[in-house]
Amino acid sequence: MKDSAMHTSREESRPYITKDGSEIRELMHPEVHGNCNQSLAEAIIHPGCETRLHQHRLSEELYHVLSGSGQMTLGQRVFSVTEGETICIEPGVRHKIKNTAYQDLVILCCCSPPYSHDDTKLL
Image (cartoon, rainbow, N blue to C red; front, side):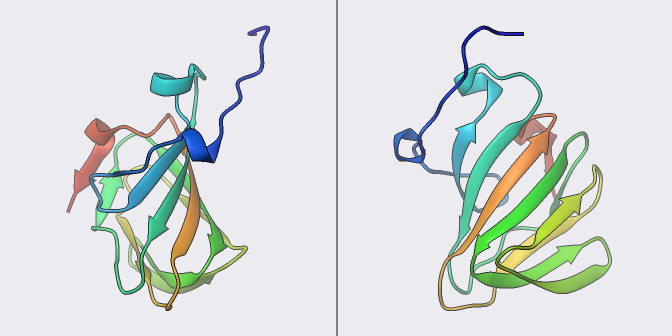
């Protein structure tokens, strides 16, 4: 176990566009911050936009909706999501999320193993 705690700030994290088309801020990622087994990011999907249908071969993802609402496609299921809800996306499951509201859809995304472009397959 490491002696020092890792600490990050959202304001210090520069946003970028992921392979699925969402705007991401890496809040904690091994390649940047030195943690080991997972990554945590904030994703923003703007009104009327959606991520591309994709899957991850290795990573299990948790989406936690911080604000806004949308429509989640998870395998064969399509369902509404809103603030305060959490979705578990198992490895290999096709998924995307669409913003169906007039405000940004803001989601925390936790991946284990950590998010990798190489582990993201667009469908």
